[in-house]
Image 1 (tube, rainbow, N blue to C red):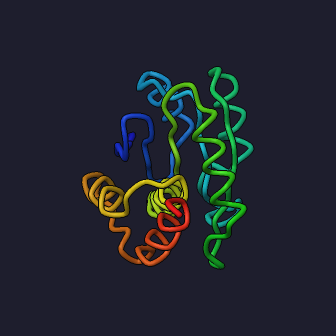
Image 2 (tube, rainbow, N blue to C red):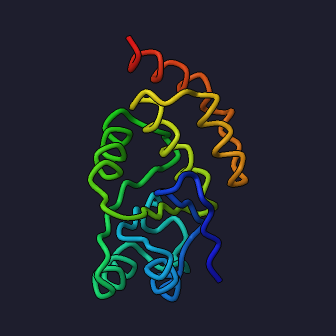
Length: 146
């Protein structure tokens, strides 16, 4: 059962997806799937290669930006920015609960100059709390505005 949550008109976040969710994502207008979960984190969950094969078979683009326990890096934020900027339809980002995907989306938005308060509201509207990364949102947004 799909649990796609709208962060913006073009970005959805989700807990771990299944192969069956690929068709639902395509029906929802998704053209890009971003996997933010490291392979092997849950051996019982579909792994990246399985999701990638199903996405490509459905005509969707797939990209992996795994976020492990070490947190977020500048290259990961920049990769998320680039993927979101290049997507011609909706993007679905997923991880175990959707939280890391939402954090990464929020950081990419801030680095692009979006207002932190707006990012926080959008995430909250989707059921995610980004206050743990709020200082980074403020810093990245400030740097983008400078």
